[in-house]
Length: 166
Image (cartoon, rainbow, N blue to C red; front, side):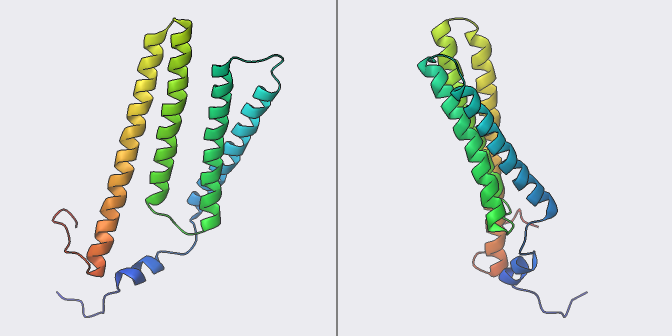
């Protein structure tokens, strides 16, 4: 059975997918923006209202947590301002924010525990688990994006379809 209707090109298919964010994507973007700003304000307020001078590692921790919160707020802002679906790119960006936050905050925690000399193994195990999970999410996000780009090239005729694509 053949279909005599003309097939749409890859750019036409992509254009037809929609030019605005879906309701769910907008809610996630607004949540990232609001929670990121709220987290940054909360952490900065805690940092600012400390009654005395803080140790260097504590100041570094407050600064890193503030930067992580601001990164999530920036990502939410970017999604809302672009107003187009980013498909797999938003997952890649979010995964890298998560991995960076895990490594930075984990390093700070390990440094703090090493300085105190107590409970190091539990913290190291928790940090290792968070970094491993974040790394898996980065790899999966990049793999999904690469698969979608391969499919786009195959649809546009730039490259032969891979044997695994349907």
